[in-house]
Length: 71
Image (cartoon, rainbow, N blue to C red; front, side):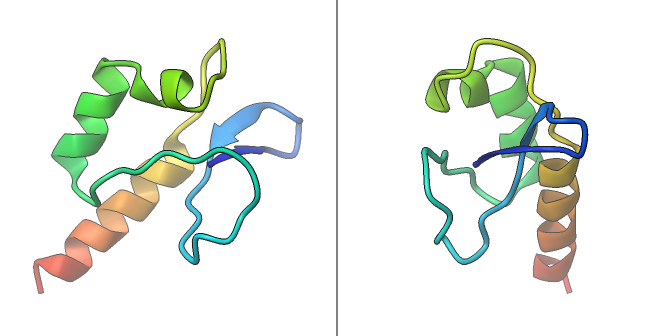
């Protein structure tokens, strides 16, 4: 999902409950898939956003989820 930080800049956010309004993009909870999506610029294209998107929140959520899967 596309959200905004405190400064109003666009950021990628995780919609864990799949309830947020608006356009979203599906991503496997795997760090390799995240790296591939970033390299291919898949998020701006899927979210129809022309410009950079901060993905730190998304990267942290994927890493957290990947850590749970390995236990």
